[in-house]
Structures are given as structure tokens and as C-alpha cells.
Image 1 (cartoon, helix red, strand yellow):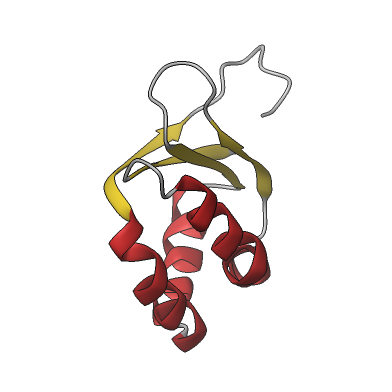
Image 2 (image 1 turned 90 degrees about the horizontal axis):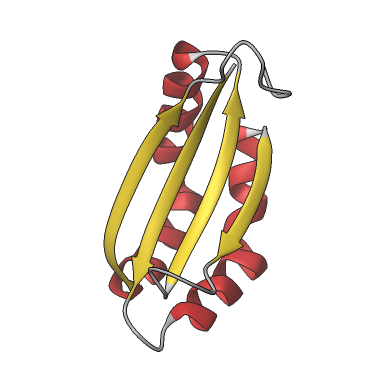
Length: 104
């Protein structure tokens, strides 16, 4: 298993709008196509105005296939047009669990 961590740093004052849009429209599309939602978080200390999601996949090939399917989905393209103006920067990381991790 791998975990993808996706961090979106949102323009100051726009985080609540991004969270609302995801709750109303985006997360349902992602869950349908990506599956494996571990959790979604905002920050209280540190880099503020950050939206973080964690997605689990059986492996990198599954991740590639599901992400490509998401990017090709017209509903997702329409959603991206709404949220892209809110996002300042994005960072993605692939996390590989250790042998002693409870998530493997």
C-alpha cells in the first residue's frame, strides 16, 4: 500500500470557501473514482490556509490509473475550474509505510 498526501496552500481568507466547495461537490467525485480516502484535514498550527488529503492505494500503478480517470472526468474538470483560483501552491508526496506501520 502507498499513501498519497496532497497539500493545497490556499490564498489567505479563502480556505473556508475551498472546504465548502470540496464538501458540496469535489469529495464525492474523488471518492467515487479514487476510493481509499483516509482523511482530509486543515491546519491549525504551522502553514495555515492549508487543505490536506490522504488517499490510500494498493500501489503506484493503481494510483496512476485512478488519477488519470479522475483527470478525464468532465465533472472533475468543471470542479477544478472553480477551485483553481483559490489555490496558491500544491505539493504531493507518496508515503510508503514502514514494516511496523499499522497501515500497510
